[in-house]
Length: 73
Image (cartoon, rainbow, N blue to C red; front, side):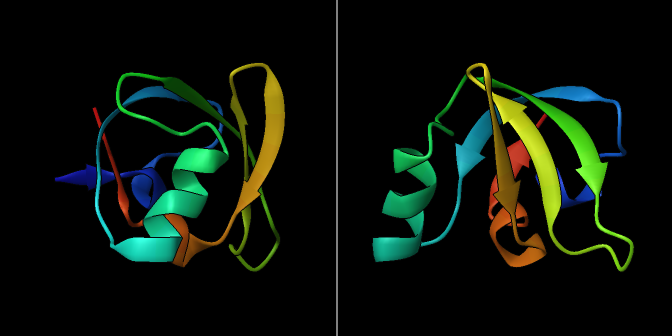
């Protein structure tokens, strides 16, 4: 299983499944990250957390813990 946390900067992936429960999962979905959407990894902070991604035409920052809940291909 590959997660968004494992994707290198400059790569585009497609979301396969969202893990997690309750409010955290709802927050991720509210940000526009749903099954089938393409996500481009733009930047990574110097210490690795957070990462900046492009999703549905806008920039979004995610913590590594959140990115780990997003399964990609």
